[in-house]
Image (cartoon, rainbow, N blue to C red; front, side, top):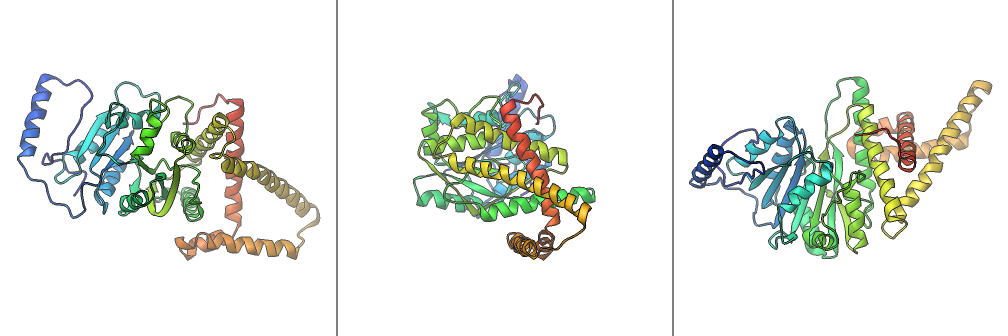
Length: 405
């Protein structure tokens, strides 16, 4: 099935929230009658999964086509997909419509966000969620909800594995994706190196991530139990809190679930392939927004069972960043003043660290292993990482007027 093909042969629904003229409404009704008269193409994956999917999409274009294709390839198909076109200015809506009307497609609703969405992704997600609610709660036939970015592609077994986890343990409120970077080629050597660093970063994090007390559900792909989300809706008006200072809606919702006593976990088999930032400016904007938003939520929620581990990790990382900067400065001055001096203690430490760096990315192939064992590239990238860490903390506390989007 091709998402880009446009054919009105499916019983999938297109929901238009904007006002239509009488002619358009008549044409849509005729189109529905025609489509109902035509049989759907059979599918090999099981239906009746009780899974709904919400995909907020803003100017995604071709990326959304790949996202929807990855849903169509799932070994456990969702019952329903809601694409929320979030104030897009490109062909995002057309791509979503093409999928909705494709033969054999999953039942798909295409919603247009009305007006200007001040709450960004949180607003788009809540708009899609309200479409699934009755009397303020999820419909009984929807047991699970997947939310994913419009530029994310899922491993074919994602939904089946996440579904099994929640079916086995009723105390788990959500399963987070293990995110890996998409394999895209940079236009320049510098861009290719920057993309490689990000792929390494995602791969290492996915391989070493704690399962017992996940820091945050991933915005790229999160699979929720609707009972847990209904629990949140009993305490507040929306699943994803709508305020302009909420820069990390996925993390805030994770904290809210933990506060209500729900557990969240992740699984290395639930893989989501996410877009990478092709330029340093875009990367810094993304990471500063993430880290600053995280610090903002810590300040709101305070020290608690849900936050203390992450806060301690951040506290310990700041002296580490300062030590690296100081050690690098002192070593450079000593080298310029007295020349190179080999200390075997440092050599042994460097050998151990080199081995660890290579081992932690062994799944990416021997070339990447050798790249990481060289240490120097990773040290340089750590300088960039420490910059956005410190910059984010300062931005949270001094409320910098500079906007990072």
